[in-house]
Length: 113
Image 1 (tube, rainbow, N blue to C red):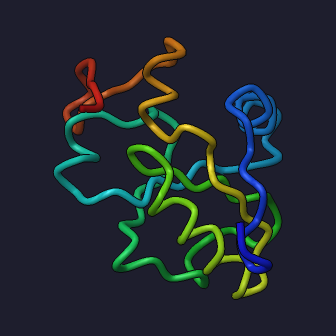
Image 2: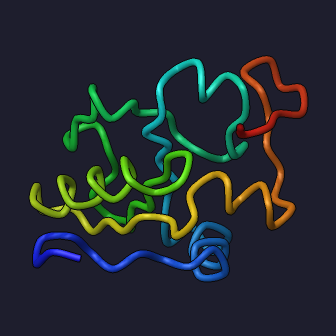
């Protein structure tokens, strides 16, 4: 972890923060990955189009991708822009493996490959 890379957030802590309204989940994967399966409450902001000014400044931002690499880069960029951000440890693969809901773009059950 570099000096500008924030510590990751565990799935357990992320769920607590999301359920309490203290955080939002921002999925930075590509549109086809999002369509295949995403957390129902997540916001979609592909990493190539991530604009800090479009995100809420008053809650923690939890970034996620498939396994963590892009999410970590996104969290670091958001922190550099002055936003409180951390990456979800394990990404959407970890989310799926822990049994949390995933949905496709059409609302049907989704998956992460």
